[in-house]
Amino acid sequence: MSDTRPFYLRWFTGSRLAMVIGISLAIHFVIGVFFGGRVIFDRLQAPEPQLEAPAIPESIDPMKREYKIKMKRSQQQSAAPLPIPIIAEIPSDLSLDNIDLNISNPRSDVRIRGAGDGDGTGKGFGDGFGDGASLDLDIKIDFFGISGGGKHIVFVIDFSDSLRDSGKEMIMRREATRVIEELPLEVNFGLIFFAGPTWPGMDDVRDSADNWVSSRASGVNGAAADSFRPKKWSRLPKARYYSADSFARKRALKAIRETPTLFGTIFDVPMYMALTMDPIPDTIFFMTDGYCSNDRGITQIRQMIQQLKSQGKKIPVIHTIGLGISSNAHLDSIAAIGNGESRYVTRQAYLKKYGNSPFPPSKEPRFETSGKIPMVPSDEYPIKFELK
Image (tube, rainbow, N blue to C red):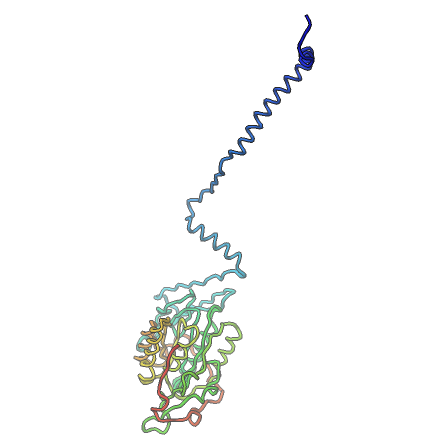
């Protein structure tokens, strides 16, 4: 009986090799379809990736860790490394007689030194660093035993003729020289000198003398020491800040060393000049050896502080130093309204603390106010000012 199947079926079943090849191809086709389909399905149905953050060690607080990371990035982006602060903590009951600390740091040549216990009357020469507030800086500036801080510091220094008595002039020049030499580089400082007239310390008093008048003292031919006043407060020279670099230091030290004393004593104009600086100082050191009337002292200064408060401006810390005097109610009141400290320094206490190292008086010719500054009636050019 003849085979009626198609030729290819008869050939496939008739050849054993062809059968093995056919079965193998069929199996590979089925396997390829199965795995290929699974891969396609997995790609279409891929699960969302899950992110797992590494655990934060228990010894590091998460907030501190974040702060350190941010600080590190900030330092890497800055042009220069952040300065290393200098912190000095000295107990107030520690004897400072043999302490003179020199702190070496690339950013500063500051030397921190306290003033010891005085043997004068009143509050004496202090107990060391005092209680002055430190603003913005962890370095405190010591002036006549009072400590104050901040980025903008102004020294208002009396250059009246009375300093020539009892060696006070030498002490004033010596202490002012010391504090300028030891200023850290971070501090911007201002220098204001006063007697009868007031002027920026690095300027010449004669440059603004034509804006000043005075009045006769009762029963005396000459002018009253507290009668000096500007014709126009708006024409007063503006005091400015200087960085504590070598050039500014040299100018300031030259002014302290060579500026002669002159006649008169008033408190209001030098304080006005300090309070109108831009920006307003963080700390003002006000040093004098004299007195003046209420109208040229605390009364006017209290009015200035009120003007600042009414404008919502900050009030600087005001420290006052009485050189060669045992007390002064005006200086106490000025320090009180400025949240500062008042201190009285006798010549004996200063020399006991720092030794007798003579500082020569200025060899420059004195500016004679008599004949240079006109005398006018006391009601002419009244005291009128406005802090802006």
